[in-house]
Amino acid sequence: MNDSTSVSRRGFLASAARTSAICATGTYAASELTALARAAAQNATDAKQQPAASPAQNKKALIAITLDLEMARNFPNWEDTHWDYEKGNLNEAAKAYAVDVCGRVKAHGGVAHTFVVGRVFEQENVDWLKGIANDGHSIGNHTYDHVNVMAKRPKEVQLRFGRAPWLIEGKTAQEAIRENISMTSRALKQRVGVDVKGFRTPGGFPNGLGDRPDVQQLLLGLGFKWASAKYPAFEGIRDLHGTSDWPSDEVYRNIVAAQVRAQPFVYPSGLIDIPMSPISDLNAFRLGRWQLPYFLKAIKLAVSWAIENGAVYDFLLHPSCLGVIDPKCETVELICDLVAQAKERAAIVDLETIAASVRTEQAAKAS
Ligand SMILES: [Zn+2]
Image 1 (cartoon, protein in one colour):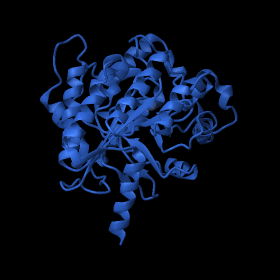
Image 2 (cartoon, rainbow, N blue to C red):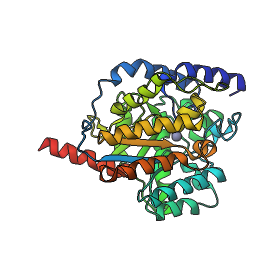
Image 3 (cartoon, helix red, strand yellow):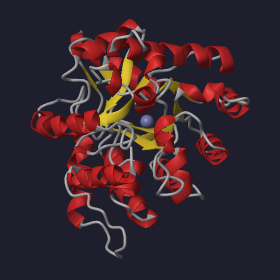
């Protein structure tokens, strides 16, 4: 992809901000744009999706701190784009930040949930991830190459395979996607010695996997009981680069309002979705070009809403992005402090715990 393409794509993404691209942004070309456009159209149906349980004031808020372990275009330098072809090839800074975040969460009595891009297991040393696992944090699957699980044609699966199609030659898109996911679980087991805990789709989708029962079945067939796929759409993000403007009051209101649509739910297939809660770091710092104080305000408002309503909040960070903007981990410390102040009304948990609570609520409803 040449630079002019990426600039025009960025323009598109800014105008399509309400479709809220997350980590997939910059990973796919035309297919992603189609997906984003489709996702925007589906936003109307999004509001009809009911959470598994309505937030209730007497419930304990379950707050997750999740880390997608991948490199991201535009970070650490805005002109960086080569990560699109090597998403899992983490640099030292991203690994160090992941370790730092997990250590801080543990110090506050919680556990973090990481999602690993399998190609990192080709690196010589994975002791940093073994340390994270040994400290009790969870490791989920984020595919081997950060593939587009919605792809229907092989060349849409990931940019790496557009450049090197022989890597998936002879496979359908679905076969390539299945192999990319299963290979990551095997690599995690072989190099870190732990079983995979859950799946997060590269990119988030306003309607989750609601329109793709085939993808739900693929994940269920690979043994996953839950996925984190939905990222609710919200209006109002605009590129603030070069200005001293704060995000509008309206966009903060929209982020808080989106939390109702970020509650866990169950697809008719039985697969649980634990959505990513707006606003993600890449959404804020790539699409909005926000400064850290703007982000801290949004996170405080959203987490406070979750605590007040006994709801779920699934904070999504990318060490390759947040580590550049927030090297002192102010965001993670803020979330941990809000949970500590809430005492017994909130806890920092992994997504396995949230999935278990969804199953318990389902069973209670059925009986
Ligand atoms: Zn990702």
